[in-house]
Length: 141
Image (tube, rainbow, N blue to C red; front, side, top):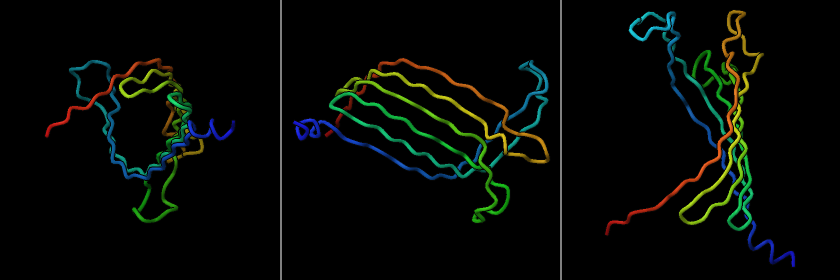
């Protein structure tokens, strides 16, 4: 009986490391025509881990994404400070062409990240999403 269940069970996981260069602008006024503001460009080393348990067409899983800001030279490990933790949890049913599911996604700043005695990352939030996704492939021979 248990061997029958195991034929429908699979564990999917992934680990990713990356280098990111991102920019953002802090607006001083809320009018679109006003170009005043401060522009920042930062370099990050990021890591992401995702895992999913699949049972037939059903799945449940989650993951974490952590970017670390580069404070010094690229290959000096101690020069990276984590900025925030980005979590997700999901479940659903996936067939050949359709994916119907639910996602919970939340972002939490790491409050120990200090630069010049000021906390840089102050954004925290989450969202819930119920979705239906259609996927197909066109093959050209």
